[in-house]
Length: 99
Image (cartoon, rainbow, N blue to C red; front, side, top):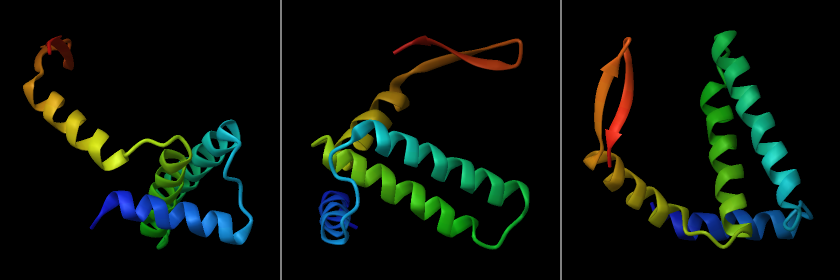
């Protein structure tokens, strides 16, 4: 899957259908709403949890395209960074002690 192409396709669909493509604050709020819907589906053991998670990804990719951020590239960098971090358990919680 080409995440950058998917971002572009999602943005184009938003544009074609007349959805928001400029109000970043609104997109963050809509993304937050999708996360809440997925959490609700999880808690209530609804059959549409996968679809709700897909909605989160779609909003996140659309927002990334609006902000001109290559999310695939950013994810790869972050995964690499996380691999090198060192953690220590403190009271049962992982606490980062170095990057």
